[in-house]
Every structure is written in structure tokens, then in C-alpha cells.
Image 1 (tube, rainbow, N blue to C red):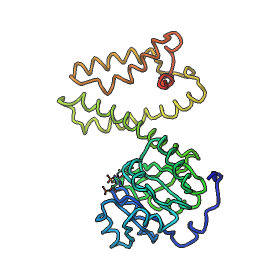
Image 2: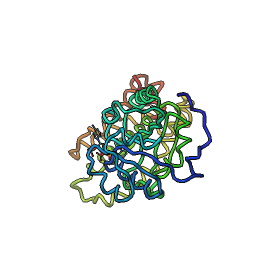
Image 3: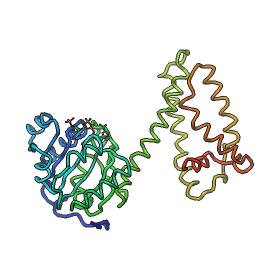
Length: 306
Ligand code: NDP
């Protein structure tokens, strides 16, 4: 279906009674989602491979389906929150999806999202993929700031937006069904880079007369100040200008990197988390020192795509 122009919410949205939906997957995340829809008065049919997990939710008002097909038949809106893409394929194998609106909150890659969209559409369903930027404890807690990226059928998203916003905020990021996963993974990848740096910093002081809790506020403050790099890199990648207004040039940073590596060695700390980024800066510089010595480190991003 090609329905990606924004549409007005239908009667299933905020103006009407809470819309019915079906949810497949009652792990930690699925259970948290289910509770928010039940608490908001949505008629909810649930299915889980291990049926016993539905028990507490039935006590709270959910209807338990014995099979995935039974759950899918119960509502137009069908939400999937299973372990991985393979479990989605396994659960819905042979199930009639004609006329259904599938929202897949199962974590996957962009390619899996796109393939699953084509798979759903070939079965007569509209499809939206989601990437959950929250832990189960943040679900149903607006002040926790969790949200979900959605991409795929704009029509589906607009139809069910009010229902989808019950557990967490909703951000639609494009008609390409792979974009929710791409946004999700981009943010998670940045997070792990941050975790790597923090881990290295704490390892450096371990065994010294510096308490982690004393370094902690200094780290938070420093990382906050260095957060300017997010916007700075975006601007430079847009303009492809890596040299104007640079205050800490690449040649200086590569020279300073030697100090970071020697300090790690002195402290007996592995450089496995630190070296990859320093190596990337070095590669950018040695490629053409005259051209890149005065650059911002954002220029090194251009080396990452093969
Ligand atoms: P859990 O491990 O708690 O639950 C996994 C769920 O998938 C269970 O319902 C399990 O059923 C089901 N499942 C696994 N394999 C199959 C299969 N082959 N066929 C059918 N069902 C299957 O995971 P979560 O609930 O925490 O996570 C669910 C999704 O949400 C994942 O994709 C995860 O990446 C994502 N997510 C989770 C976050 C979190 O912090 N928990 C944060 C953001 C996203 P059974 O009970 O029978 O084992």
C-alpha cells in the first residue's frame, strides 16, 4: 500500500473510546506496554509463546489468545514486541494479515524493517516499524522521556497515533520502514561510544587515590561541555566545510593522542576502547597532512563509509 501522505486521525484516535488492539509478546517490554494500554482503558488481546505470562494481564483486564492467529483476528491494530525479527516471522507464519495494521516494536536492523514491511504488505497489511528508546521502567512514565521511533506507513501511524502514544512518545521518521531502526541504532551506537570513553576514564583511576564518585561529576560536566560536537559535526557534514573556525585542529589532536596512549600504558590500562577513534584521526591526517592538519575531527567521519 502507498499511503504515506499524512492523514487525519480516524475515529480510532483521541476523539473516540480507547481503540482495541492486540499485542504479541509479553516479555519485559511487552508486559510494560500492555499495562499502559490496559490502564488507559484499551481493550487488549494478548498472546505470548509461553502462555502463563498472560495470567497477570488477564487479571488486569486483558483477553489471552491461545494462538497468534487468534490475537491477530481480535483487532485491526496488531503490535509485535518479540525478541527479534526471526521470532516475528515464526509467530506470524501462515497467519492471515489481510486488512491488519502491524506495528513492529521488535528490535531489528533497517534491512529487516524494510523486508518485514514488504512481507506484511504482500499479505495485505499496512506496516510500521518501531525502535523503542526506553527501558520497560520508562514505559507509561512520560516524565522519564522515553519515546519510540516509527517509520513506514504514514497512514497507519496517523490512524493509530493516539493509541501508540499511550506507552511512550511517538516520533515518525519517514516512509522508509528501515528508518526507525536506523535512528534507533544510530543513537545506541553513539551511546556505546560514550560508554567506552567513560569506561576507559574510570579504568585509568582505578587503584589510585581518586574515588570514582569524585571523578563522576567532573566527567559529567566535561561530557556535557563536549556535547557541542554533536551539532558541530552535523553542520560540517552538511556544508562539507571541515576547516573554518576550527579551534582544536586535527594535527594537534593526533599529537596529543600519544599522551593518552602513553598514560594508558603507564596506568596498565588496555587501549582497546580508546585506540580505534585515535587511529581514525591519525588515518585522516596521514592521508594528507597539509590538507587535513587544520581540520576539525568531524572530517574523519568521511573515512568511515567504505
Ligand atoms: P524479553 O527477552 O523479555 O522477551 C522476549 C519475548 O519474545 C518473549 O515474549 C518471548 O516469548 C518472545 N519470543 C522469543 N523468541 C520467540 C519465538 N521464536 N517465537 C515467539 N516468541 C518468541 O525481551 P523484551 O520484552 O525486553 O524485549 C522485546 C523487544 O523489545 C526486543 O526486540 C528488544 O530488543 C526490544 N527492546 C527492549 C528493551 C528493554 O530494555 N527490555 C528496550 C528497547 C527495546 P517467551 O516468553 O515464550 O520466551
